[in-house]
Length: 357
Image (cartoon, rainbow, N blue to C red; front, side):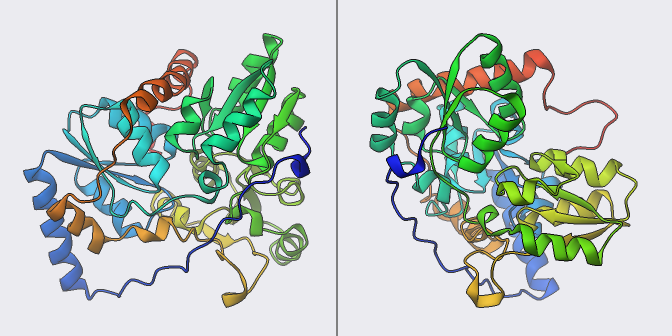
């Protein structure tokens, strides 16, 4: 493991959580109707991440779009016949869509919606780190910029990171991992692989604390604990299931427990409730209470996506993803390698007769 003190990453400025006005039902229905018309008129499809607002997830499904984790978002965007992809999520998701589909227009409700992992891994600093360790396979999490992806050998999401590292380990390769130190350490512990870790962290998952989770578990002894591997070890160690967003949703659907304590962004509750309305979901506690926590288990950048600015970008087209062609071409290689690896091993994708996760 790398010494986090050896790499000085920039301090990430976490924005205030945006507050959107609550729309009366009639006004919301009218707004959704206008958006549906705009999507149809522009041959556009809406792709939303599980962490976005439930109204956006619902609208994506109502209009033939898709709600998914970042791996499936990338796959769907590539397979869709739409000429415009509207990505509700954070910037790296829009960039990934553009990298894989340079011929398509890719819009986002707000291009300022970034990610603490992305912001904490500047391309120049990361390239220098890679240059110091040329004997390592460079594996980067999808939560990174196009330029960082272009410097990598592999791009992975949380749903495919373990099998990719196991594959590299079987080939005798050492791994340089970026940017999430908690996910990297989790993979390192599970696989026993030799890994150098970039010292980044997700502002949402970093705030889950083991001592607080232990108290909630005592109050709900029958609840299963579901944890995203971006959380710290002290939280992961208490989990009944550790996995990607899709894997956590699957656990709620298939496990017999009636209650679940969930340690990831609360935006995921919309899909969990949709698929398992009889299950009780309990948000895992964060470090702070109210105004004293930075994220309070909701990503402030994901919250920059709303029905209001979705309509606006479809009218103006001013929030379009643009990537330097050389960077885009180089970044496509490790992303395509991930998608090919997933397809060859049957990882992810919709299976006939199973719920759409």
